[in-house]
Structures are given as structure tokens and as C-alpha cells.
Image 1 (cartoon, rainbow, N blue to C red):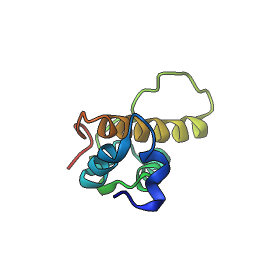
Image 2: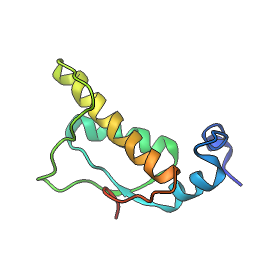
Image 3: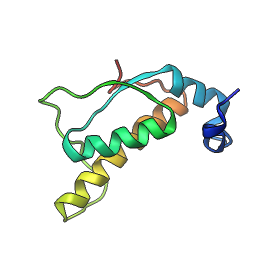
Image 4: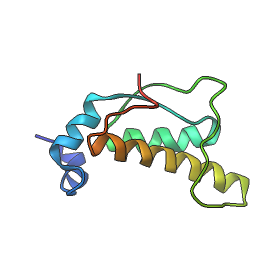
Amino acid sequence: MVERRYMRQARLADVGEAGQARLEAASLALTTRGEAARVERRYLEAAGATLGGGPDDAAPTPALPFEIHDPAAREVAAGAHAALVTLRRVWLGGGPKAGTR
């Protein structure tokens, strides 16, 4: 049974209880740095993920599939995008892959 706090996302067809269980069982690492990492951490923790650390110092901020000119907004978008990519991969059963421990 999924915790009450995660029931809304577990009801999504693409997530389900099995996807939420996979997320809770995975130990994920942040894939971004700086402000982007703060946003990424917030999204992943709110979704129920366990975080095991961050990227090494050489990890580049991932490219976005869209253009944002403001540097602060770009950082927030990079963190949110990185978190959502990880969540989608875990929920859909593709495994944590990059960014896992």
C-alpha cells in the first residue's frame, strides 16, 4: 500500500503503485549542482525518493530541451527537468540508471 501522501501520483496510469514502490526502493543521486541541485532535490524528495548523494564536481549541468535566457530561471528549470527525467525513468520501470547509487 502506498503512503497517503503519494496516493495522487500513484493513481496516475504511468506511475501506479508499482512505480511508486520502485521509486521508494531506489537510492538516487543528484545529477546537477548549485541552485539546480536544490530544485532537483526538492522535487525528488517530495515524490518519495531516497537520495544518496550528489554528482561529482566534474558533472556538467544537463542541457535543457528548450531555451531560457535568464541564468537564474535556467538553473531552476535545469533542476526541475533533471528531477522529472529521473522520476519518469524510475516510475516507468526503466530503472534509475544515471544518477543512482
